[in-house]
Image (cartoon, rainbow, N blue to C red; front, side, top):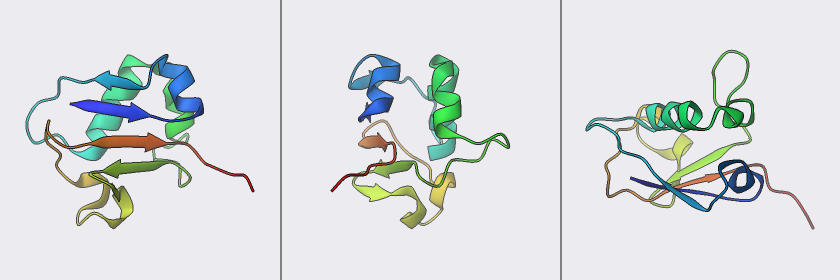
Amino acid sequence: MKVNFYATLRQIVGQKTIELDLPPETTVFQMVESVMDQYPLMRPELVDENGDLHGHIHIFVNGRDAPYLEDKLDTVISASDKIDIFPPVGGG
């Protein structure tokens, strides 16, 4: 599965896209956990001290933000899905 990172998150992983080898029936949040396992510096950027995804982080699955998916972070994803992870974005 290819996962794309943007802005400051891209700097942490050192590239735009990483490839994850995840088992079938992996959820969005399990994918996030896999990213944090491979890139420990991502943990404070993605989750709070309770392990919950920060509200300002946006994870898009095939162009849809995870909170709007039927099962939110528990949505099962597949290797063919397009995953994009965005940090908070601001500007004017």
